[in-house]
Length: 187
Image (cartoon, helix red, strand yellow):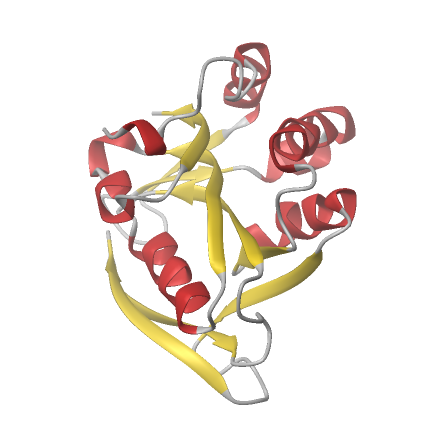
């Protein structure tokens, strides 16, 4: 791993928070298809205190450093919009193909159980805007790498990719070389 991919000492996620979040996650076997162990973070969303601690942890790292927050469909919308609000930043949804009504940039990619395409409105990010990308899980890295590419196509600058859980064994971080990546938990 390169130095730009790991937080500097004292700049990373709170280890006590990581323990509490890990305890709140639910593992769902064979979802969305046989052989996949889905990490469900909806119990975290039900816990108001824990959800606030997660967003506070992210906000302390990027206060004043991001003009926009991207939330990746669909679970990235939830924490991403909360974080954007707390940062005083705009929120931009990255959606699955065909869900946005105006002109879009699109990127296709592979994931652990198929392929997908994500899109962003061409006018959502202005040249030079600093963008924080938020999602729930970093798995194979395809979705996050696609979001990074979308930001760059719009002329934005990626500040970092923030996730609740990284499935380290899938090596998704490798697709994000040169991009700062913070994961609250690594499984």
